[in-house]
Image: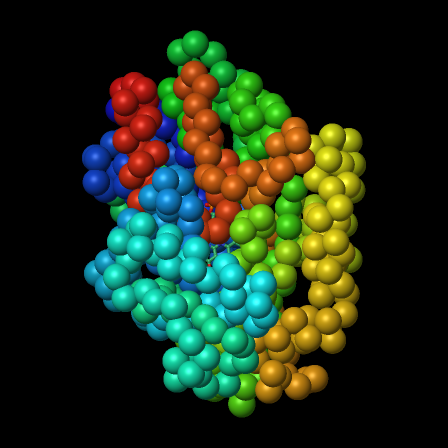
Length: 413
Ligand SMILES: Cc1cc2nc3c(=O)[nH]c(=O)nc-3n(C[C@H](O)[C@H](O)[C@H](O)COP(=O)(O)OP(=O)(O)OC[C@H]3O[C@@H](n4cnc5c(N)ncnc54)[C@H](O)[C@@H]3O)c2cc1C
């Protein structure tokens, strides 16, 4: 496949987050495909979810067996560790402890053990209070579940390296280039682009969109995902004061609530030796709005017109959770209280605001949160949707799976 002229590509990938970069790299480096253009509206790769996450390489023990997420996360974890090793990038296997702070939480622990066993993850185990304190002496809780496999990495370095690999293999990486409009024909896809205030058209034979929180409207322009709506949930992080960071050895999570796709405020270490608390899950006033005061009116109006959003928002159980999360965003004390359920030694003044990132969460017509990753294909375009956590861990395996599925459908020919 060859690009014939600067305004005609063989394949356009939209979005240089980790998925777009991993896919471009896989196709160019491992499959030798030429004529790939990678379009990114920001001035650098990985400026949205891929650069604003917990940097946890999830082993995948918590994921429902049989889901696409489980499949690509477990393989992706292995591939991410190997990639970091090969490239000399940091990757530390520091283990993850899931802590039950009450009897209700304790009841969920055996299910984690069953899922880990179903995934064949050896070494994962239920731990009583004494064993839990041997792993994390400063954590409070009744019992837990421990995985030795989970690790941490540097997301920014991984994305930058993937993009550079792709570029060196001939991918034309165009930063500062926004896709405004997509029109699909029988032999070509026409993309209306905006670059440096100028508008231009790019023709391509194939297009794959890995557009994160912008994924639904691109898919809808191609006749897909009409019943789905992006509802961005912001996750806010705080950095722990140095003296408290030392009290956290590995990754510490509360018991996950199976009805929510969010893992709850947790404590993580970073590869540069710090510790973070977060993220919460607050409804964001814009797809790319990262602060409470940052309101994107267009996005808000679109959300308020969506029946999907109202069906979700008016569900009693959801409303209670959402208000609780909002409170942790508005009140530093509320966030501290949440983090103290895991680490009681935290004191006022121990938490400093850090980054925030928005989840690319889709909601269906019934108001239910979509839980699994989706790959939707229509004609000459394919769209990755609902790439929420553990999308980063999964990226190298997911990119391969996307390539395989699309090749079977005749893409890239
Ligand atoms: C708070 C939070 C914590 C998380 N923690 C973890 C974790 O610990 N471990 C883990 O594995 N996963 C985690 N995730 C999930 C993970 O970060 C994402 O699944 C992953 O980064 C998704 O990558 P992406 O490439 O699909 O999206 P993104 O990184 O959002 O990239 C999409 C790109 O597309 C570009 N784009 C969009 N529209 C256009 C357009 N019209 N034209 C041109 N470019 C466009 C955007 O600018 C962006 O760069 C977390 C996510 C969040 C939000």
